[in-house]
Image (cartoon, rainbow, N blue to C red; front, side, top):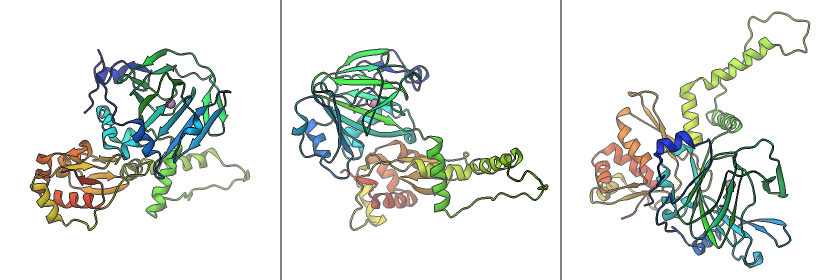
Length: 385
Ligand code: SIN
Ligand code: CO
């Protein structure tokens, strides 16, 4: 288990002073840090088709190279100046997934994934901006980091067709990070990390949808539900001569029509929960074969089994008021439950591991055990012992 140390700061002070506002180095954020994986294990993950990986390299003559995985061999990149980046490692490596847990003061739906990078000396992806908040945890080795504040005068440059970098920036943080140090970087802050020696970095990334994503997702949801919603009507229209014009009054009505859609809170909640609980990357779910029957599950849970939640599984819920039904969203699936299921819903969404007591509590109730059976049969929870 990793424990986050924020120095003099409380979590609430960190949120008030830094979150989405300014970058900060949390020196020794994880005391006595032990890497959850080795560079060899990371390279092993990068051999898999289903796992997104890339290598960014800077050649001796200053050219940038970007290759996408899977990778079997790195000899072409030489001994230095390159980085292997592997996305969504929390989906595949339970020990590495533990690195996300100390940041669970942010709701599940805002958390994206754990990206892990291995850099050779001099390796880095170059100066760039990201659209998302990130905590970059330094693992083995050291890295020279420079981070600045958002600056509208920075220009995007493309030293390689698939690599977006920025022009030189002024830094407000210039440090060499050591194992266990954590750098928090808000969206839009320019940053550049160059590895001093062979090093590992773990990025706990967040997700924040843009209006375009939300609207595209909403349109997909309506199509899937076969809902066209209300249609434009104009029973009070007056004749006009300027027939080419879209009038402001017409546009107001179009605006109202669209707002009517997003003002429908129950539609919005159903859509948003389903949309945001979809994992962006492949999950490592494997359905048990054959499926378990509920009475088998009850027996195992009552006997002292322990359940683990699939790495990277996105789970969140919405309840409009205290007595209302709950909509539980798990990887794009919506399950409606009565208000009294709240403690169970919170247990499922808050705990990545269900201990013996929790499992026995579930086994003692047929409704809970029934839902748990379905979730185990989907491969979303699995027996650890
Ligand atoms: C890295 O881990 O190598 C790059 C992380 C970043 O700058 O976003
Ligand atoms: Co970055």
